[in-house]
Amino acid sequence: MSNESKAQELISVFLCEKDTDIEYFLKNRAILFEKLGKSRTFFIYDEDADEFNILAYFTLAIQVLRIPEEMISGRKAKFFDGFSSKIKGVKITEFPSILIGQLGKNEMYPVVISGTKIMEYCLAKIFEGQLRLGGRIIMLECKDISYLIRLYEQFGFNVLEKDYEDGELLQMLKILEEDEIIESKEI
Image (cartoon, rainbow, N blue to C red; front, side, top):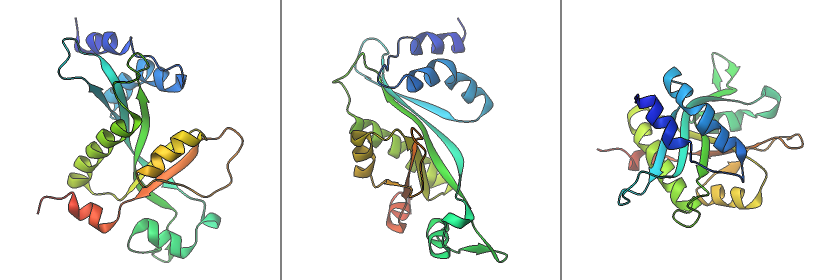
């Protein structure tokens, strides 16, 4: 059995009826996105269990955060960039970011791991990458559900202020502060 077949077998039992997009991505896109280098998917599992069971997973990718020029002030552009609001006299409207593309819990193990713990694992992995590559904006998109928004706000994410269409996913951002960036580095 190939590694891909083994991976497909392991993810085939992941269940997330609360958000079928999370389940669909893992079962139908995660392996392809890995092969194409579009994202990396990380499994959270119980190391002490006899069997390998996916408790949760998250997917990380590099993304460009694009904000229409009319929606961003010079002050906000400088805040997002961390250094300047313009490049060669043109306002910056695109910012590199780390995207939490998917984050989900396997409903087969509802009480084994919390959303808070999943986010802790996810952010730890992001800080590992940030240590080597840099970056200061973490972005995610989520449904407009109060418990999800509260969870992400707990970790310093804020909803990007803009006009959202009905049913459109909210964009949430966390801008790393200097002490978060420096603290994660080995000096």
